[in-house]
Length: 420
Image (cartoon, rainbow, N blue to C red):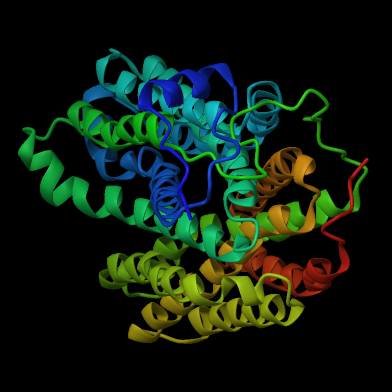
């Protein structure tokens, strides 16, 4: 069987930005599938690299820019705030220009905003650069589920697990490598560290622009004239998906925010680093495990019931044990929450009509990050109001139960249905 001719690079470049699917009828070769998987993994990694480049350099920001704890709090809250606000504009870009061009724009904004933080002189400029960076991530997030749908329509669970695996790796790389390697290499310059972490994002943007495969039956770069972008907020599916993913995000943000202070209140300040490491590194085994099982589990309510219940058990373990057991249960919480995250990210692609995946994804991200921000604030208020550390973790318990309650959502929707 004669293989289809390879599309020249200059044609690919032109079509990424012009939106003309000249390679629409190319065969889905093994090389194309491998390229698509690599690009998905890299894009997943870029969702978090620049965001988590901030925590390791917070002491340097205090010293150089005279940032208070409140200033750091605002700086840390900007990314999830933009993730909620800019998700729908990301769907607009997808509807107007196509999935791949929107993804490239998101990557470029991500890289440019992160690098600009190194050149700008004051705290206000740092906030502005962070807003641009987070806006880029916000555009990328609703672009990936529809890209999974059109590149791998028969392997949505696996492809989602691939880019989520990259996301989890990205969460760890910036946090774990900045202090021991990046800062010493560049004379402890937090500015240059931002530039360094923006480079992989820029390279990924170029690779997507040059190498993104055009597969059969998928307009990966061409806009659809009738494609809708505004989420149908009256459609129950969007709210159910948003609440499931919002519960996952809230568990992650709340646990990371309050676990250090809880461990200190428990009389073990020496375990703060170990507990946080366990919570975040515990996600990795789930990322690799779900590469083999996500496709089978994504539409099984029992998987969400088990993962939600396991998160609740992990929380009980954290607050009812002492010493190294807190570290152990923090690791289990990270693992179980990552399982739900991977499955939840696949749901818009599985439960939505093809043209509705971008806008349903945007709606899901808007609801989920809004919920996560609100519950993080509520957790802090409950801790202050009750003067009991357990109050800070109440949202984790609520979200674990919410995942269990909403588990039936994943088997109700008809993938061929269209939200109107």
